[in-house]
Length: 303
Ligand SMILES: Cc1cc2nc3c(=O)[nH]c(=O)nc-3n(C[C@H](O)[C@H](O)[C@H](O)COP(=O)(O)O)c2cc1C
Image (spheres, rainbow, N blue to C red):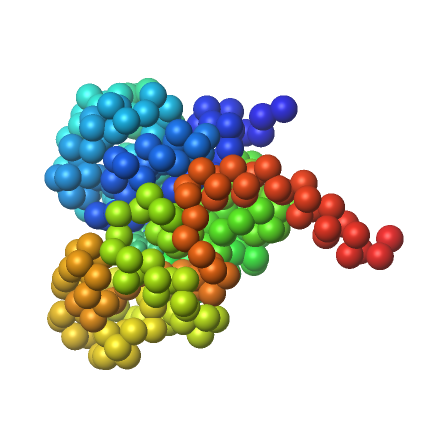
């Protein structure tokens, strides 16, 4: 029997590729969706918006779009762009969920909103979203200032909200997904794990740095004017976060492999990633091996 996230998104495996500006593009999204999960395309860059259509030549499976509210709040035309591309599922983030939810619903799209606090979750419920992505501070990239971890946030929000939940921050395999299900989620979203896949377009230097990172490998930076940000502990991350160049040339890091061109968004789960894998393995093994992970947990209860 399908769970609520599988039904809502129309996917075999409720394993979602995270929105990542510049990186969440057509090839990666199509690979994730073809594997039975849900690929996602970013819409902050013109290339991302072009990919909303280009991805239709690569897969006939559902592919979601990310709408970063801060970036689009004064330009609702993004909803027309999404509708024209036939997008069915939109993941909204970084901003007030009330700004776009009704418009997206009117255009026939489902809306999942990313939250990092109970307050944010309740606001998203009021806005009428269809699902929540609950993201803990373990995750890579910009994070809620609250700094709550996935293991605390998931059951807290699940106890107060009757919407289906996708867990994000620290997800990389069946064991983390099984834990998320126990804590109240019905799906998982992965950023760092998807970066370290064969199909992700980022440079080998970045992928290898993720594989090599240990549990001291990331750091939470305070970025003036922004929420906090989890990045790899590179030389850049030890510089003053107020340094104007900190976020400046992220594409040189992502695609040319210059690891000191910018800070490198990466989650703590990098310490658990030991090899690059095909996206299909990540998506399918995560969901198919959950029963094995739960059985192993049951055997540890001693009952
Ligand atoms: C390289 C990278 C870039 C990211 N860029 C964005 C972004 O542009 N917008 C966004 O909402 N989240 C962004 N994130 C956060 C992810 O969407 C996701 O929530 C996070 O990676 C989940 O945690 P995980 O890294 O433990 O899987 C980024 C994460 C990474 C690792």
